[in-house]
Image (cartoon, rainbow, N blue to C red):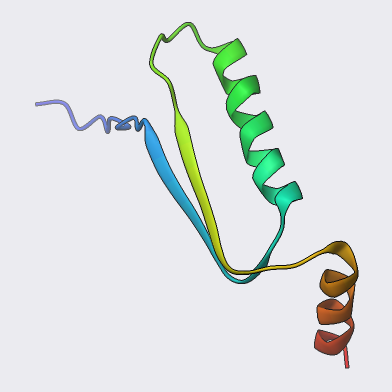
Length: 70
């Protein structure tokens, strides 16, 4: 009996941020998928669903960080 552990692959993932999210995070996830597809020979398409409780821009993000640092 082999005790080797096998990693189970996935095709769909959900990334959900509690708090502010932005389009750059979404873009980074999409770029990751593109890079992943280039390095793998799999024909299976990976998909990531991105969500958050609030969409914020860069200024709002910096403002939130400032409040956290006080």
